[in-house]
Amino acid sequence: MTTILLVLHFLIVMGFTLRILLRDDLSPPARLAWFIILNVLPYGGSIGYFLFGEVDLGRRADKRHKAVFDEIKSVASPMFGDPDDIESIAPVYRPAFRYAASINGFQPVPGNSAELMADAAETSKRIVADIDDATEHVHVLYYIWLTDTMGTAVAQALIRAAARGVTCRAMADGLGSRDLIKSPLWKEMEDAGVKLAVALPLDKPIRTLLSSRIDLRNHRKITVIDGKITYCGSRNSADPEFLVKAKYAPWVDIMLRFEGPVVSQNQLLFLSDWMQATEEDFRTFEIAAPNVQADGFPAQVMGDGPTERRGATPQLFATLISSAQASLTLTTPYFVPDATVVEALSAAAHRGVNVTLVFPKVNDSWIVAAASRSYYRKLLSAGCKILEFEGGLLHAKSLTIDGLVTLIGSSNLDLRSFDLNYENNILLQDASVTRQVFQRQQEYLAQSVLVTLPEVQAWPRHARIWHNVVATVGPVL
Image (cartoon, rainbow, N blue to C red; front, side, top):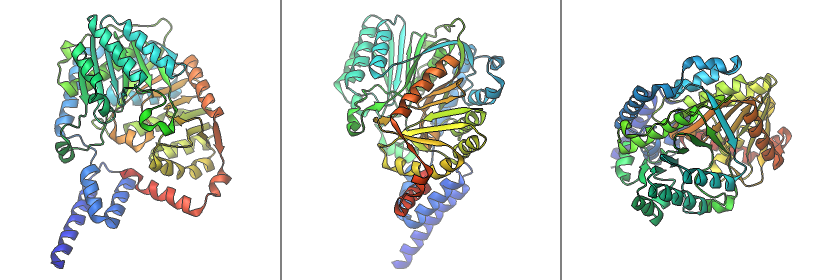
């Protein structure tokens, strides 16, 4: 019996070890992390790898994703933009905008305007008002959609719009919005004529576990009204009190309200998700002509996810960071980057760029909090400034460069956003909008405490060991 168990143990561990070695898409740190787990916890590690080791929605999903984008491009290619419009971007930033275009095919399109929302209350008020003014269609997609004040207000606005004949499509992630999907409010929207869909549903968990990963999620936050207005940023359809994790409140977010051709790109990204979930034909959608703004700025949408090529988001961040000439300010709640991003940040600071990084002081994920701090010493030694926000959970994902370029959206600087989640972002070049976003970032800094290198060097050994242990296995978390 002992011999049989030893042989079984050997076969299990070696089987998963060979699988890991055969994967060309796995980074060396991730491969090493899995080796450690398989050796320390061979059976638990094997089960963990089986459930969470592969970033794959399955061949059917990959095939469907390609077919969807091919169909969209064949019908709506002008809305993807003209590659020649890259000339509107300052030469030093063109490589970053070109790289962003290589992900989905969305080129920088001129003629956009944007307005920074003052706070959560204004965001909710403006979204509801825009939905109430809709005459043709409203498309919304949220990772987390709660039945709180904002979530209910948006749902009721969709119900009113549907009642007056506006085509409304509402989509929510199967995990992040599971309470809404089971609630009477979801049924009320359906009864009112709002077309509903669930992104990555959890109705067949066994099948999902066997064929994919249950933690591959749609993390996007997309609101499009009449093809003329779109919102992009970090806010879900939820109050800042965020009742599901109230002890970390308020959740501090940032949102921009856009008009212009970039709205059409965000619309197409939403429709790609809708088609993936419902298999509705693209020809049934109403596609409005781009609403070009006089003297508007160039902007482009970037959507990433497990059906796009691996490494697209960290490579975009690294390219953007490398383009910075004088200053770079970044805010994110979850900072567990790969080596590409860490080295780009360090290199930028070494060459004299004023690199400022702002993270929450108290994080809702203890794993992320520990892993994040494992990078502090390297970044501070390179000359980066690190501040920890004390005014709640800083959930804003924003990047400003040289007072001219802004990236805003749903992507965090962690491996989940890099590999596992569907994300949406808008990259733009405009001094006025970037100045507004930068000023908001300065407000975050005013509520933050500076982390110094001597302070980090004085951390007790057990804390440093803990941070580094978590960071070592971070690629598999």
